[in-house]
Image 1 (cartoon, rainbow, N blue to C red):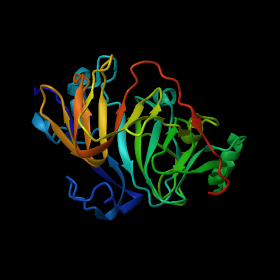
Image 2 (tube, rainbow, N blue to C red):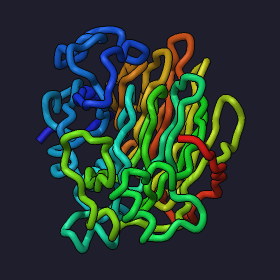
Image 3 (cartoon, rainbow, N blue to C red):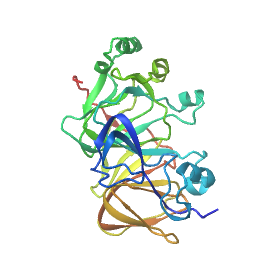
Amino acid sequence: MADLYPLLLLPEFRERVWGSRDISVLYPHKSARGVEARSEEPIGEVWLTGDDCRVANGGLAGQTLGAVAKNYTKELLGEEYSGTHFPLLLKFLFPKEKLSVQVHPDDEGAKRMGQSCGKTECWYVVAAEPGAKVGLGLKRGVTREQIERGIEDKTLESLMNWIDVRPGEMVYVDAGTVHAIGPGSILLETQQNSDTTYRLYDYGRPRELHIQEGLAATKLATHAGKVRRVGSDGEVNLVSSPCFHVDKFVVREVRDFPARSKAGIQILVALDGCGVMEADGFAPVTFAKGETVVVPAKVREYRIRPQWALEFVRASLPTEAVNEPTTQLVEATAV
């Protein structure tokens, strides 16, 4: 079996009815699967660390991330991680129409359904047109009876908080939050690696709804909202939560990323520019806008050598207990 090393992953392009036919802002050239920047079918999601995403470099090239996680669990995920499932799913979202009003179960609810984990997520706003909104949680005082009635008479949207989003903002969406995404933004989503989604309302599209499951998973009050960033322009913490840390960096000269006290998986996603990730004893990995490098837990320290400049997000798992983030939720009256 080949030794483990930093992995460059091929993105996986997924068609969605609400997606965009133009994803050239992040993917100006053909993808590994031959999807053009302008596609015949709308691309709604680009999965960066899905179980079926394939390795592009080195001796493990062609293998899926799911297989690598199973075969190299401790080397990849760290001694502190108890599972064998890759823990974080990162994806770009390209909504041109409204996504369904939906909710995800928390860990406890997911395990009752035989799933490995729930789905808490966050959205970093890569780009946004003026007036782009997300629906985030229920207005104060809304009852479960009103939710059920809103689903029946198609007024559920009016019971939700709709807030404007702007480039550079981070939105936290903990499990149990009723939510939706409006058109006009590009989001980088970091989430627990679960695809369990309960649709409560879908604007008449011919897709399955999961009303009873969704109502059972719904929490009337959650921690969802915008997160205040902490740090300088070159290094900011976007969100820290019990499920993940997400930080953003802008590197314009060689920078070392020293070993952490407890090793764990790190996921680097380039938002703009190009750079080389280097670690002693391993082949360098070049990655550019829209590409992802998975840094295994066994790699304790590394450096980034930008090719002029590199803006990237780093997602990782908490290595100690973390509280829910402090968020701000501003209610909007119009959908």
